[in-house]
Image (cartoon, rainbow, N blue to C red; front, top):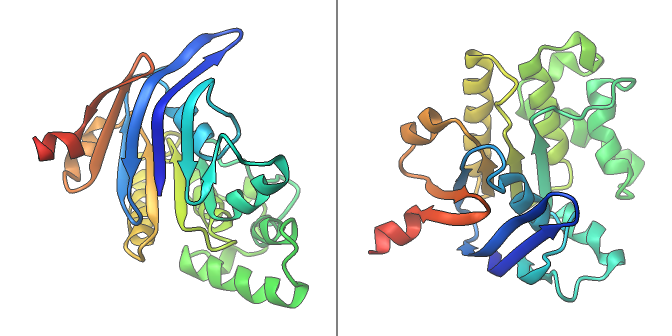
Length: 226
């Protein structure tokens, strides 16, 4: 599903962010992407989402390749790849339901399909009663659940989560992670960047790819094969 082949990423101002990164993530897999701040975790996610292209090497996501992907096809990729951020990135002037609906509107969903889909997604994340609430009226954990519902709006096959529990208290973080686990249990692949090593240790059944200074320094899949 995801292939990184000898990937380098060099930014003009900050320099080399990734160097010779190679890994393969299978369909339906759950992967923790770990490492210290500045290790390259967010850059990996941006390359998967095709916000960025590698300086060298190739990134393949589903049937899309960084070498051949045309600009007009990027929206097709992003419909299949949901993305959740640490800072939620909800539209402050729209209700919870409207934030989710927006993700469907921009992809051209039929208007008569949007409302029932939004209601189902709100129920799936346990926030049906908060449909008309604005982000500032929601707790951090509730905002993150709305952000997850929005990421699922177009039925992706892959969920990317960039430090999704980083701005939450312990209880909300635990609930958010359990929601992500339940999404993975439906068969969706998940790649979650996190610096929370206690969380990673609690779930040894999930694969861990550790980055340091832009390089892969540990991959539990390779360790298991050794």
